[in-house]
Length: 75
Image (tube, rainbow, N blue to C red):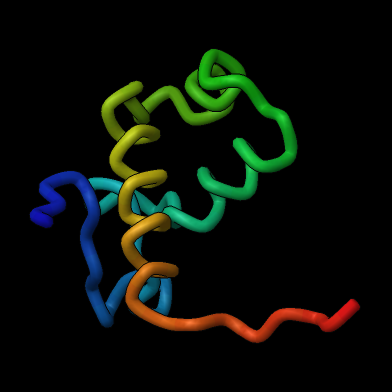
């Protein structure tokens, strides 16, 4: 899968994946969605973002967790 809107630059934001070279980490966008923030609210908070950026951030996060197993708390 190719991501055209996600960038990783070791000299920016500690090398964490960001949206289009902006200082907006993918994790921030994904966390906002998880917290119930609407796309419209995210776009208002970050005017440089576009709807396509949000969609690609979610696809990137999905692919990232598909690539490795995360520790889960047992029940």
